[in-house]
Structure formats: C-alpha cells, structure tokens
Image 1 (cartoon, rainbow, N blue to C red):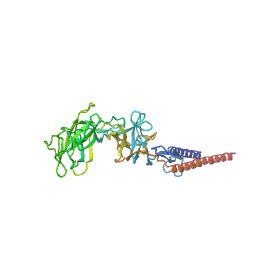
Image 2 (image 1 turned 120 degrees about the vertical axis):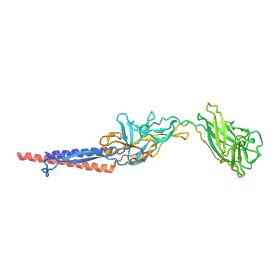
Image 3 (image 1 turned 90 degrees about the horizontal axis):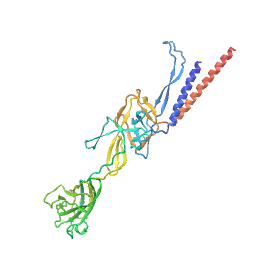
Image 4 (image 1 turned 180 degrees about the vertical axis):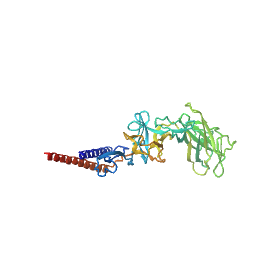
Length: 425
C-alpha cells in the first residue's frame, strides 16, 4: 500500500501547486499583489542510524508557500492619490479589525471624513509635521508617532500686505503736469500710473494704484497711491523719489526730503471698511530708475495673499504630503510612514493585499521613503501585480502533468493489487 500513499501525497502536492498557480493567475491584475510559489520537500521514514540507506521514501509534502516580493511594474495614473513604491518597503495602514497592517497597494482615496484610506477602508498613516509655538511647520516630522492622513484641512489663512517692491522706469524728459493739485480722476495732474492688488487681514483684495508726477526739479518725482480710489499717501504733497543725474535712485521720502531714505522705502496707510485691521504698507523703490525713454514697469510685488481653498495634494518622492491652496500657499500635512521587515516572507497575508507582522517576519523597521532600506514614492502611479503570466501558465502545465502522472501511479498500483489477488485464486 506504500505506492498508493506515495502517489496520493504526489496528487495532493500537485493539487496544491495548481491552487497556488491559480491564485497567482487570478490576481494577475490585482494592484500591489505579490505572487506565491509552492515549495515542496521529500518524505523519508526515520530509522536507526545507518540502517535506512535503502529506504524508498514516503512521498512529498508542502514545505512552504513562499511569497515573492519582487518589484511589480509601475504604471502612471490620473489620480495624485495613487502611490507606488519604487524599491523596498510598505505603506503603513491602521485597520479597524486588524490594527496596524501593511500594503503595497497604493490605490488611496479620501473618505467622507477626509481621511485617506485604502480600498478596504484602512487609514493611511503619516508622521505628523513638527510646528513652532505659533503653529508654523518647520519642515521636520515627528517620526516617533503616526496619525491618519486627513485632507479636511482648514482654509489657508490670509496675510495682510505689509510690504512690496516696485521696479519701473520714469521718463527723465517728462514735463510737469498741467493741473494741480493731484487727482486720481484727472489725468492731467500726473504723468504715469500703474496698479497692483493688496490684501487686508481678512483676505479681501483691494486695488492699489501708484501715480507719478514730475516736478520742476527734473530729478524729483512726486508719488501718490490710492487704494480703492482713496488717496493713501502718507503725505500726498511730499511723498517723493529723488534720482541722481545718472538716473539712479538717491532717496525715497515721505516728508518732502527732510528725511533722507537711501533704502528707497515709501510708506502708505489705509483703513479698510470691511472691518479688517488698518493697512500699513511699505513699498521699496530702490531699483526704480529715471532714464530717458518711455515709461515701463519691470515688476511689482507684494507679500499679502487672500484666503485659500484646498486645490490639490502633492506628494514628493520622500513621501512628504503637502496641501496646495488656491492662493498659491502650501502646507505640509505629514510624511508617509514606511515599514520594512527582516523577513518579508514571514508576513501574514490578510487579503485585500494587506499583510500583518508575525514572529517569523521579525520586528518592523520604520522609516521614510528615500532613506536606507526604503524606496522612493511615485505619486500618480500604481505598482502592478508581479505575477508573470507566462511563467504561471508553464507552472500550471507542469503541475497538471505531475497530477496525471501520480494518478497513473495509483492506477498501476491498483492493477498490481488485482494481479496479486488473482494469483491467490
């Protein structure tokens, strides 16, 4: 009966091999899936030392179902929350049922609460950003703890304009305006004008316009500014820019030249009517010139901005997640918490392309993408299954032939048994 049991173990092994191969083929299109390989061991009876040299063996058994953590192909997608790991490591997730789990499946999306979750609902974990006492992020992260990545961030707070830069050229051959005093509605009371936008403490925008009027002194220009049509010059008749005979700025003053300001700063003030704090703005004109030729504006900048709504989420190769707002600002939300293990094959498969740590896998090694033992993150991409269909189909044929051959052994053994029974007759 030994041949029956040996062949039966072969049938079981071949069937298991087919099961493993079938599972690989079934998951050929599963994102982040890692194929398995059935590994077998021969069986021999244990006898006294040196007395079983002629034993024929007892068949075969499944030694292990070995997971293959080779890299899958990375393909680009249209979602910036799709993430792929190029290299070693796993994403860290928090699952309501299994606690901390790990995955290579980067198909993430935001749930109703703004948490970034996997297809099974497990929350993606990040290291929170370190902040100053005033809540400003420092660019570093607390790698001693993790938290859910949440996209329901508050609006980006506005910043009132407090300063800016004006770079332009005032025509040196300009005539003194015909009309006096200056009036924003009278184009004959000034020579040139240009505009920009400033913001108050509530994030409301205001139209700010600079007006320039040549004086009897060819090297001196009066400067006026209006905000929402209101003249906001510190001293409308004495805010001036003074140039040398080479067209370079000598000083910018708010008191008709009494105070020399070689730094080129002019001060303007305005009290908005929307309840915001009064605006006190200092514009720097140090690179403004008074050359011959036409009036021209090179650049006008200011440091304020409006309230911002969340526009998109950006994730860099090191896993730093930033919220980008409509006002052009960005805030770091965290850095992806990566994990690795001394023995990846010891991880327990949980389904949904998730694994759990075990004694065999060794203690988890935590870190960040791009550092030692961890690959880089590619946003807008996914890692495909690492199943090689050609290899899987060949394995299927091999397992089928092994199954057929072991079945034939049982048939042959049965015929031998029938022959023996016939001899007794």
